[in-house]
Image (cartoon, rainbow, N blue to C red):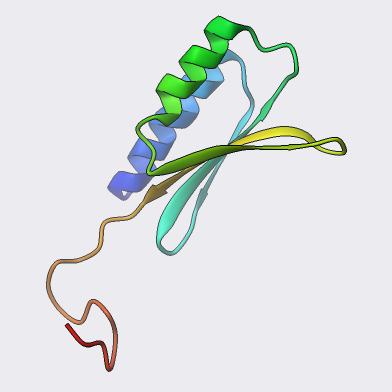
Length: 92
């Protein structure tokens, strides 16, 4: 598992410990974590949620009247430091 997957799994484990149901997905350039956030989440639990996602490269909260609130976090995969990083025609 890439380092991004390990970090995302750790975020998901912390969110699960708070009582949130999580989903982790591996993508080409990053790993995502999503969790549904109930309206009744306490202030203390919010602090724990923010501590958990603080290690992500990006995170946010999507709130809609139809689907409720979804917390998301993205952990980027490391980019190789040698070789053809940018692909054909990439100018360094």
